[in-house]
Image 1 (cartoon, rainbow, N blue to C red):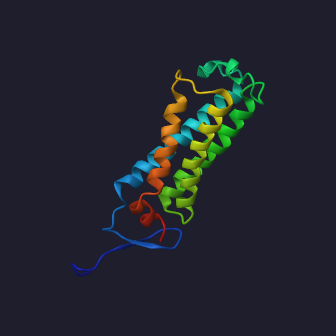
Image 2 (cartoon, rainbow, N blue to C red):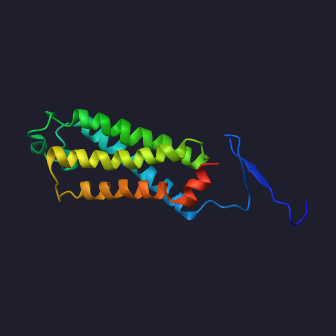
Image 3 (cartoon, rainbow, N blue to C red):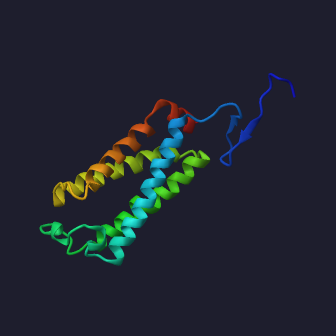
Length: 157
C-alpha cells in the first residue's frame, strides 16, 4: 500500500469512512450526553415506578396537586421508556453511525426539552432539587450538538 492510499472502514450500515477521518470531538460529547440521559431516564423512571410517591428521589408528591396524576407511576413509566430506553437505543445508533441517528438524537434533545417544559407547566418550577434546570439545559445542549454542522455531516452521509 502506498503512502498516499488510505484504509477505509465499512460500518454495518454500509457506508465507509477513511481511517484518517476522525469524528469531531463534539460527537463523543453528544454520545456521552445521550448516554447520561439514558442512564438517568432509566434510573429515575425505575425509581418512580418502584415508589410512586417520589420520596426516595426527593420529589414531593405534593407537587402533583392539580396535575392529572395521583402519583408518579405514569410519569415514571414515560420517563423510563421515552427518556431512558429510547436514548439508550440512540446512543448505540450514534456509536455505530446508523443513518437515522441524527433525527433520533434531535428527538431525544427536543423530547427532553419538551418534557421539562410540560413538567414546569403542570407542577411549576422548583429550584430544589435542581433537576428541571439541569435536564432542561441538557435537552437544549443535546439539540444544539445534534444540529452542529460537523456532527450532522459526520452522521448524515
